Length: 465
Image (cartoon, rainbow, N blue to C red; front, side):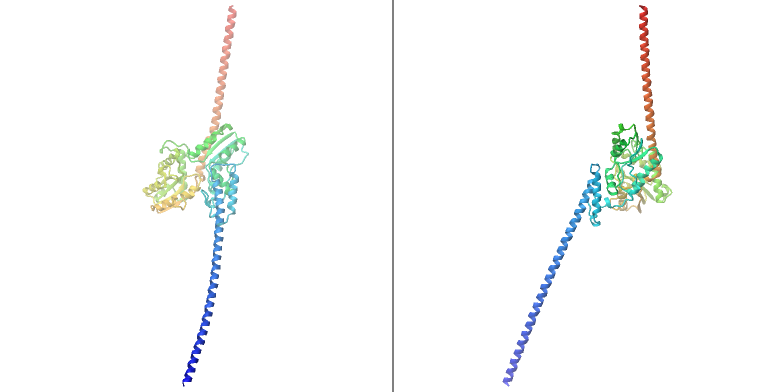
C-alpha cells in the first residue's frame, strides 16, 4: 500500500514538472514573439517618422522656394511703382510682367511688397483693348493735348477719359487729339499689365515738337486748379517757345474763387449733371423725389491740401443753392476737414436721411471709387457708414464723371474758349504789329519833315548871302 502511494506521488511530481517545463517553454516563445513584434513596430515607426520628416523638409523647401519667387516679383513691382520715368522703365515693366506670368497661382498669392500685391497684375479691371492711348505721330500743325491724372482701371479709362477725348475729337475735327497722363505710377502699371503705352507730359510735349506742331491747346481733365494742374502748367511753360501759339483751357470746375460762397456756371453744370445721373441710376425722377424717400447722395472727391480745396466747399454751396438738401460733398483725404467721412456721416445723420448712396466726385471711377469708397475693408466709406448704425441702407454707384454727356459738353466749351483765345492772340499780335508799323511811319514822316525844314533853312540862308 505504501509502495503504491509512493509511486503515485512520484508520478504526480513528474507530471507537474513536465507541465511546468512546457509552460515555461511556451512563455519564453511568447515573449520572444512579442519582443520581435515590438522591434518590428519600432522599426516601422522609425520609418514613418523618417518619411514625415522628409516630407516636412520637402514642404519647407517648396514653401521657401515659393516665397522667394513671389518676393522677386514683389521687388520688380515696387521698382516700377514710382513717379519718375527712367531709362530702364520699359524694360522693368516687361520684366515684372514676365516674372509674374511664371508664378503658380499659389505663388501669386504670396506676392507682397512695399506697394506690391497680388492685385497689381491679378485684379480684373476690364478690357484694355477698348482704350486708345492716343500716342500716334503724324499730328499736323494743330494739336489738342488732353491731360489727365490717369487710372489703371481699364473700363473707367475707356469710358471716362477716352469718353472726354472722343467728344473733343468729334467737336474739333481740325485738331489732332493726343493724350498725356501726369501719374507715372499709373502709366507704368498700365504698360506692365496691359502692354498699353501712354505718354507722360514730357513725352507728349516732345512728340508735339518732333511732329512740327505749331498751335497747341491743352485741355486738362482735372477737377480744379490744384497741385496737378500747377505741375502741368509748369511743364508746359518750359515748351512755350517751341510753338507758335499755346493755350491752356480751364479744368472742369473753372476758376476757384476766394471762399466757400463763390460759385460759377461750371460748378452749377457739374452739380446738375452728377445729381441727374445719380437719380436716374437710383430710380428717382429727381433729387426731391429721392429726398421724399429718405435718400441722401454723398459725392466723394479726392481732397487736397492745396488752397484750391475750397472748391469742395463751393460745390456744397452749389448743391444747397440748387435746393439739393440731400446732397453732401466729401473727400477721401478729409481736406477740407468738414469733408472727412466721419463729418459727412454726422451731417447726413443730422439731416434725418436713412438711406445713403455713395458716388465718386471724380473724373474716373478708379482705385478711390472701388476701394476707398466701395471696398469691403473696415475703413472704406461704405463700411464706415454701415458701421455707424445710423442708416437702413448704404449703396454705391461706381461711375466716373467723364462718361456723363453734360460733363463732356462742358470740356468741349472750355476747349472752344482756349482755341478762340489763340485767334484773339493772333489778332492782338497783328494789331500790335500794325501799331508799331504806324509808329515807324510817323517817325519816318517826322524825320522827313525835319530834313525838309533844315534844307529850306539852308536855302534861305544862301539866298540872303
